[in-house]
Amino acid sequence: MEKMITVVGAGPIGLRTATGLKEEGWEVTLLEEHEEIGVPANCSGLLSVSGLERNKIDFSDSTVNEIYGAKIFSPDKTAMAIRRKKPVAVVIDRAELDKSLEKKAEKKGVEIRKNTRMIDSRKDTIFVQHEKRGEMLKTRFVVGADGAASKTRRLVMEKIDPKAFVRTLQVTAKGSFDKDLVEIYFGDFCKGFFAWVIPENKTKARIGLGVSGQYNARDSFNKFVKDMEIEVLNESAFVIPITKPVKEIQKENILLVGDAAYQTKATTGGGIITGSVAADIAVKTISNHLKHKKPLTDYWKNLAPLNKELELHWKVRKYLNSLNEKKYNSLVKKMIKSGMEEFLEKHGDMDFPSKFVNKMMLSPSKWGLLPMGLRLMFS
Ligand SMILES: Cc1cc2nc3c(=O)[nH]c(=O)nc-3n(C[C@H](O)[C@H](O)[C@H](O)COP(=O)(O)OP(=O)(O)OC[C@H]3O[C@@H](n4cnc5c(N)ncnc54)[C@H](O)[C@@H]3O)c2cc1C
Image (cartoon, rainbow, N blue to C red; front, side, top):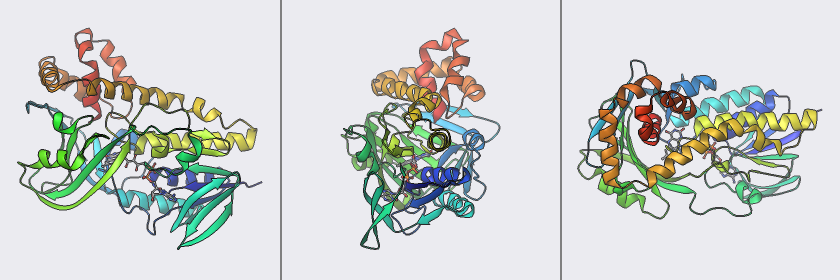
C-alpha cells in the first residue's frame, strides 16, 4: 500500500530524497517555493569526482571545468601546491545539476509542486502557500530538505544555535586564472573560514569567502579582492550551516536532511556529497519504518558512519579556528618541508578524511601536521 510523504525543498538533497522514496514505491510530493528549480544558485559548485561517482550523481550535463588540485596560501602568501595527474574535482553549473536531478525525479514519478512554500506543519497536515493562496495538504511524513535557513528545522529542534553558520559572499568575475587549480587563502581577513578562487576557465572564476557569523563578509571580501584585477559579473551572499553533527534532526513524523540537518563538511562548507549520503539514509530509514515497523529514531543510528566523518571535519575546523596567522604561516612552511604536498597528492580524499588519517598514522613524522593536512586535503 502506498503512503504519502512530503519533501520540503527541491534542492539537490530534497530531489534525491524524493526520487529515492519514489523508487522504494512510496507516493511522494516535493514542494519548492521557487518557480524554477536550481535558481537562485548559492554555491561554488566544487565537487570531488570520487564523491560524485561513489554516490552515482550524474554530472555529465553540468560540468563546467575539471580541477587537478589546489594552491594554498598562508597569511604571509607562502604557497603550497597539490597537483594530481587526473582531475580530482569538477566545477559544476549548480542550476544545471539541480535541473538534471529534477528531470530524474519527474521521470520516476515524483509530484513536484513549484511556487509552493511550506508555512507550517502539524501532525498529518502541512500548511502551504501557493501563488499567494493558503492550502492544507495531508501527509504521513515530512522530510525537511529546505536548506540552510530551514523552516522545518524549527519544527524539530527545541533550540537553534545562532552561531552554527558562516556568512559567505561570492562573485563570478572575469580575470586571468589558472584553469586547473583552485586557490585557497587563509588569514585574519576571513576569520573562522577561508577564501577561494574556483576557475570556470582561464578567464572566469568564482571568487568568494566565508567568515564566522559575527563578522561582515562584505568587508572581508573587499579586503580579499582589493589588489585583484577582476571585473565582477554577479554576486551572491548566503549562509552555510557549520557545526558538529546535530542529533535533534527527527521528531515524530518529521526528518531533516541536507543543510536543514547541518550535514555539511565543517572544513569546507561542502554539503552536496554528504547531504546525498544522508538522503539515502533518510530514504532507508523511512522505508524500513513503513515496511518493517522500524522506528524513525533509527535515523541517527543509521547516520553513524557519515557522522563519524562529519565529526572529524568539525574537529579540524575547531583546530583551524584556534590558529593565529603566525601559526598558520609556520604550519604551511613545515608542511612543505615535510613533503606533505606529495603525500596529499597520493592519499587525499576530499570527502572522507578517516581513510587519509589511517594512512597518515603510518607516517609518524607527519603526526603533528595532521589537522592542517586534513584541511588541505579537502580544499
Ligand atoms: C557560497 C557557497 C558555496 C558553496 N560551495 C559548495 C561547493 O563548492 N560544494 C558543495 O558540495 N557545497 C557547497 N555549498 C553548500 C551547498 O550549496 C549546500 O550544501 C547544498 O545546496 C545543500 O542542498 P540542500 O538541498 O540541503 O539545500 P538547498 O540547496 O539550499 O535547497 C533547499 C531548497 O528548499 C527550498 N525551500 C526553502 N524553504 C522552503 C519552504 N518553506 N517551502 C518550500 N521550499 C523551500 C529552497 O528554495 C531550495 O530550493 C556552498 C554553499 C554556499 C553558500
